[in-house]
Picture 1 (tube, rainbow, N blue to C red):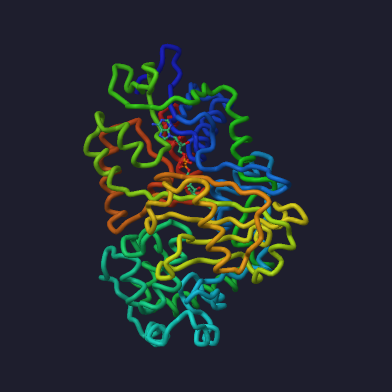
Picture 2: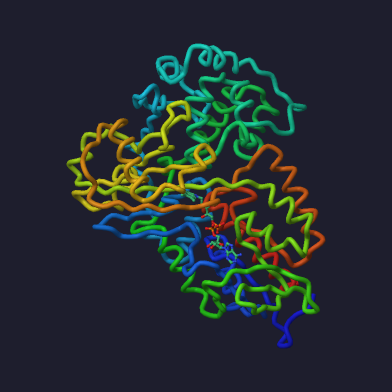
Length: 475
Ligand SMILES: Cc1cc2nc3c(=O)[nH]c(=O)nc-3n(C[C@H](O)[C@H](O)[C@H](O)COP(=O)(O)OP(=O)(O)OC[C@H]3O[C@@H](n4cnc5c(N)ncnc54)[C@H](O)[C@@H]3O)c2cc1C
């Protein structure tokens, strides 16, 4: 592998979201430890952090993009601790954990004992109006499913859930849960990629209910002490993680507000072409970008790879955060918020009661609601003006919650083509992408398009990309 005249390996990271920052941090740390590396980070926007953006408004933390990460995936919390932010890590207030589903215009609590979509307790499932009788019968029938080692290599979440638990379960519970996480359509999302654990359970054990109960028993037997919280975040906002990572990049050249247009072959290995006409020579390039951006950049260098990347669809999202006097939201039902199935024909996909989920991030005397709109269900939402978006969110909150108070403040954020959709065939597509990458040594991919869209997944892929780019130096 070539290196710069000074013998340093030149590595360019493209994209300054959490994946690119995790990659750049890994390179900076290696350099401090003596690795002969010269790193450059290029980011198209005038700020770093990508979709992570926190703002303090009247003592409340308004998260424009993600508001937390799943505690069971360790990378985000571990990186926060490594950055000296361990004292600011807070867990969701799980004593108040209760999520509602809008059903025929009324909020119904998700039944207790539902592990994502698998029932583990009989009574709450039998009594909830969310699950119609045919689905209840299908749930009982799931107990008798036999292992399917030769089952489909992949299928849609909708087909899989309907096969096990009936259509009512799909429409009233699985669909809104997935829309709240992926902004996705269960008729297109891949069960193998999105619900990998359940896909495996079916092949090995047949019944999802029996397999889930067995896994729960094992977890209980191995656990010591209280269960960890489901979600974690940082007191004061997730942007602090971005700021700390950026502070570690002292040796890294950061090109802010510069879009990478192409990566080309050159004598020095690769040439990264920026939108101001300048170029950067690189021995390795880490593309920590949405797949559609990576596809455009690689079009000339690896057309087959670019075509596969372009096949990964994305959905768009809008968040509308509304701050209230605490008294104005005191009458909301207890819990973290609600999800909205498609058949309710609303623009809201979900609404989080932030002051309940993370009370440390909302000033005393205040309430904060965060509405989530868009997804593949509503591609037009980003074209709403601020006034229209605000009016829509307020009208639907009034109709669903009876909330008539005027907010003290509102913040609206749009995230076009930001949430990767792992559609049926995703695993196979990743295999082809890996095979095409073999032909381009020194090109690495990171970010939310491949093996998980959460913050921890993006940190993992960013760090792994950097480690692989460094491998040439470390031998
Ligand atoms: C509204 C919303 C809510 C979410 N909620 C959660 C949550 O609660 N928990 C969770 O774990 N995850 C959540 N996610 C998902 C998670 O936040 C993202 O998947 C993750 O942050 C993406 O990080 P990234 O670095 O891969 O991409 P991004 O943050 O999208 O960063 C990519 C960067 O690349 C830059 N870029 C693009 N093209 C170019 C180019 N040609 N040249 C240079 N730079 C370029 C962009 O400007 C951007 O800054 C949410 C996502 C959204 C949008």
